[in-house]
Image (cartoon, rainbow, N blue to C red; front, side, top):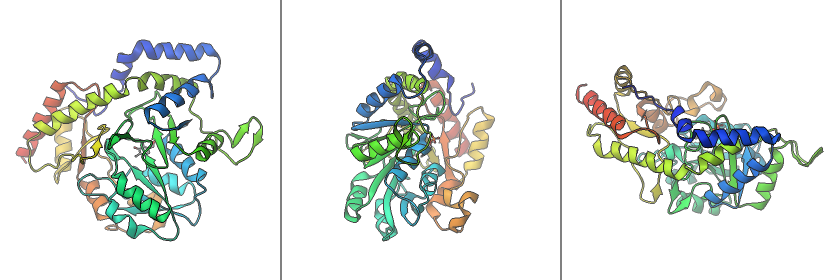
Amino acid sequence: MNIPFLDLKAPYIELKDELDAAYRRVMESGWYILGTEVEAFEAEFAAYCESKYCIGVANGLDALHLIVRAYGIGPGDEVIVPSNTYIATWLAVTHAGATPVPVEPDVRTYNIDPAKIEQAITPKTKAIMVVHLYGQTADMDPINVIAQKHGLKVIEDCAQAHGARYKDRRTGSLGDAAGFSFYPGKNLGAIGDGGAVTTNDDILAERISVLRNYGSKVKYINDLKGYNSRLDELQAAFLRVKLSRLDEWNERRRLVAQQYLTNICANTLKLPYVAEKVDPVWHLFVIRTGIRQQLQDKLYADGIGTLVHYPIPPHRQEAYNELGFSSGAFPLAEKMALETLSLPIGPHMDAMAVDRVVALVDAIIENV
Ligand SMILES: *Cc1c(COP(=O)(O)O)cnc(C)c1O
C-alpha cells in the first residue's frame, strides 16, 4: 500500500457533483472575472474568518505583497519576518522594496518567538509579518502588545492556517490584515491558484480591491499604479464548495494528527508541540530527527511519501545573497532545515494508512 505525501484526487472525488455543478454554473454564466461568485465567496470567507472584509486575489504571495504595498511600506522600511518560513513571506516584503528582518522561532512551536522581536525593532520597522506555520497560530497576544507599543502593523501569513484558532479567534482576524493562499495543497485549496486578504480596516480593504484591479475603482479611471491580481470566478465557485467542508476536513486532519501523536513511540523523535491557547488545523505534521535522511529514504522505499518544509531557510537562498547572511546567522532556522520531516496528513488519509506510517517510523528509528 503506497501512501502519497498529498492526495489531491480524493477531494475531487468526494465533492465531484458539487464541483462539476459549480463549473457548469460559471461556464454557462458567460462572466469569468470579478462577478457574483467572487463576491459571494468574499462574503462567505470574511464571515468564516470573523473578519469585516475579504478581497479575493490571484495567489497567497500577491495577498501578502499587496498588503505591504497598501500600507505604503517600501524602500528604506523594515518588516520583521520569521527566519523559519516559506520564502513567499520574505518575497512579499522585498517585492515592495522593503527589507525583511528575520527573527528566530520558539524552539517548541517553530513559530516566531515573541521574546526575540523587540531586539529586532529599529526606527525603520513598519510591520511584523507573522506566519502561522504548519497550521499552528503564532503567539499573537504578546506580538500585538509589542506592535502597539512601537506603532507597527501586524500582518498574518495565513497560507497554512485556514480555520486555526488562537484563544477562540480565527486566523485572518488576529492582526491588522491577513493574506491567505488557496494553492491546491493548502487546507482550503482551489483547483489552481488563488488567494485572499482579510481585514477589519476600511481603508486597507478599499486599497487592496483597487490595487488588485489595475489601481482602478471605476473602469478606465486609474487612481493607483495597480496590478492584475484577481481571484477568478471559476476558482471562487470551487472555493465556495470547499469552504463548506473546511471545518469538517480540518477535523479529519486533527484525527490523523492525534493518531500520530498518541501512537508514535520512537522517543528520539521530536513530535509537534501544541501551545495551550492554540487550536491548530494541521496543514503539516512536522517531526524532527537527527537521522532525517535515513528516515526519509527508508519510508520512501516502503512507499511512504514525505517532504521537508523547508530544506533551505530564506536567508541562505541564492535569491537573498544581497542581504549578506552567512551560515550560522539564524541557527535555529538552519537546524530545522536539517532535521524536519513532514509525514503524510490530510482529510482523506484513513486510520489504516496512519497506522502503517506509525509502525514504519517506529521500526526504522529503532533499527538505526
Ligand atoms: C503557500 C504559502 C505562501 C504562498 O502562497 P501562494 O498561493 O503559493 O502564492 C505564502 N506563505 C506560506 C507560509 C505558504 O505556505
